[in-house]
Length: 446
Image 1 (cartoon, rainbow, N blue to C red):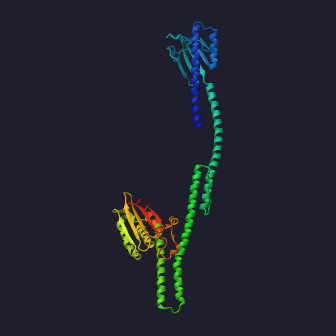
Image 2: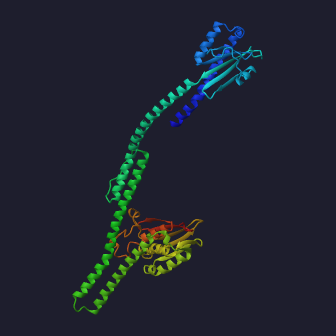
C-alpha cells in the first residue's frame, strides 16, 4: 500500500498539469477561431470576445493576453500589459506556427496558441495564457493527507489482524510443542491429534508414529533385559544346584564328582556362548564406520563355512551341498558376514531332521550377490515368521533346552546383513523346510 500510494501521489501532479494544459489549449484554439471571425485583432471591442476571455480566465484561474502581429498586447485579462510590447521566446516560436506548452519554476503553466486561418500559414496573432498550478498542489497535498490517514488506519487494522491470525495459526503448533516438551521431560503421552491444518495433521501422524516406535522400543528393551537376565541366570542356577549337591555329600564318589563337574563345565560353556553372542550382537549394532571392508571371494567364504559345519551335520547324517552359479567377489566385512552365514547354516542343521539335507546357493548380477540357505527341517509356523529375527525369540520354547543355542543367531545374522545395506527374507512350510534369502550389494555403499 505504501508503494502504490507513493507511486500514485508522485505521478498525480504531472498528470494533473498535463490534463489542465490540454483542456486550456483546446479552449484557446476555439477562442482563437472566434477572434478571427469577429476581427478582434483589428477592433478589440467585441463584448462577446471579452466575455469569453473573462470566462476562460476564471475557469483556468489564469491570465490571458492577446498579442497582434506587431508584438503588442491588445488585451490583458489582468489589465496590466495592454499596449505593451511582448517579445519572448514563446511568442516568437508561436508566430512561426508552433504551439508552446511549458511549466515555469514559479508554478505556472504557460501556453501559447497561434491565431490564424486553418488553411493559412500566416500567424495573425498569439494567445498567451498563464495558468496557476496552486489548485493542483493543494489537491496533491490533500491527497497526501488522506493517504496518510488511510495508511495509518490500514496499518493498525493489518497489525491487529496479523496478531489475531498469528495467534490462531500458532496455537496448534504450541500444542504440539507442549506435547514434545512433556516427552522430553520423561512423561508418557497419549496419541496427538491436531488436525487444524494439513501440515499439523501430518506432524501429528508422524509424532504418533514416533511415540509408538518409542513405546515398542522401550518394551523391546525391557523384554531384552528380562531375557538376558533369564538366559544368564539359568546356567548359573544349574551350576549352583550341582555344586550344592556335591557339598551336601561328605564322601561323594569320584565318579559322581566327575559327572557333576562335567555338567558344570557344560553350563559354563553355555554361559560363555551366550556372552559371546551378546558381544557379537553389540558389535553388529555399532555404526558402519567400524566395518572392515575388503574385497572378498564369496565362493571361498561359503565353502569354508560349510567345511567347518560338516562335522555337526554328519552327526545327524545331513547332506550339505553348495551350488555356485558363477565366481563372486564383493566388498564386505569378512568377520561379520562369516558370522551371519554361519548362523544361518548352523540353524539349518540344528533344526533339521535325521538324514535331511541343507542346500546353499550363490548367484549374482551386476549389482548384488544372492545367497540362499534351504533345508528339509521342521519348518517355521506362519505366525512366527515376523518374530524370528527378534533377540532370544524361539519358535518352539518347549524344545529350547534340547537344541543348543542362545536365540541370538538370527538377530546377529540380520544385523550383519543390514549393516552391509543388504536384505534378508524367510519363507517356510511346517514339516517341509525353511529358506533364507540374502541379498547384499557387490560394492559397499557407505
